[in-house]
Amino acid sequence: MKKKRILADILLVAGVLAAALIVFLLIPRGGGSTVVVTVDGKEYASLPLDEDAELLIESEGGTNLLIISGGKASVVEADCPNQVCVETGAISSEGQLIVCLPHKVVIEIVD
Amino acid sequence: MLGVMAALALVLGYVESLIPTGIPGVKLGLGNLVVLAAMYAISVRGAAAVAAVKIVLGGLLFGSFAGLLYSLAGGAASFLVMLLLKKSERFGLVGVSAAGGVVHNIAQLAVACAVLGGIKLAYMLPLLLVSGVAAGLIVGAAAIPCVKLAEKIAGKGEK
Image 1 (cartoon, rainbow over the protein chains, first blue to last red):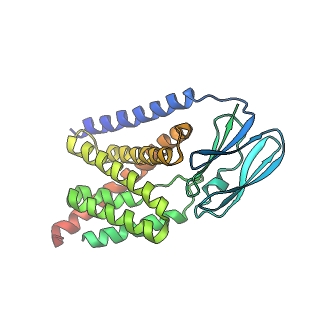
Image 2: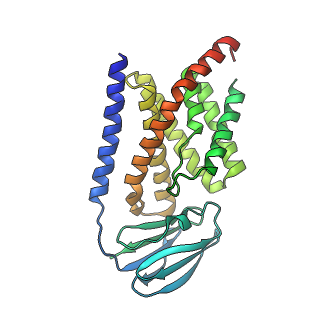
Image 3: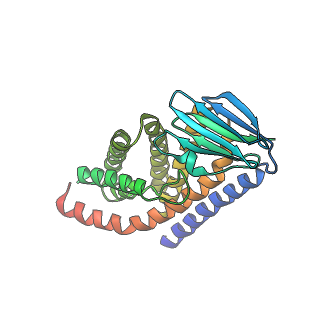
């Protein structure tokens, strides 16, 4: 009985990991060229990734400072409580995301 | 007994917010340790109470209102799935915990998708699935002695 449960546990974990791998493989990857900023589901700004720029994203919740430099986009400053967006670091390829849940801000790279 | 457990879950939830996991937004879910112990050693109802107190008070004390929404969705979904798997009696404690961790993350992602619009957040799904399993495994393994301890205390003191 106990052995059976352990087997079931292992199958469960393996199943989830397999699903993760499949989703991972399905995600398109490769060079992105545009940084799209969405606030609360609406497009806020769209910037080319190959031009250095600085954008202060102002939303209901507060502000996030987005910097595009050397083909990479990152949030360097935000007044949100958890700072997940800042800790995410720089993104540079298609499909990568920086998300600030408290401010409902999504920064993504598209082709 | 339940009050002490709820307090313990709260403290663990706070403590883990101080421990960085290396990946932004990823947490261990140590509070689930206590919820599991309550579910196995005391009663389903008791576990639900502990989970509810942890989420609502934890959200009010240490988090934001928006955060509360995510915690509620994750907590409720993972609690239901863990309960179902436990009732099925086909899975061990570790498996139940792992499933709870995964479902917790999926539910939070689903809320994020609904709030932020668009399913592009699905890009984060693989990371969240793997981290959910990993956290669930760790917490599940750690929960085994906790359940024994809780059974001992509950058996003697009877709530």
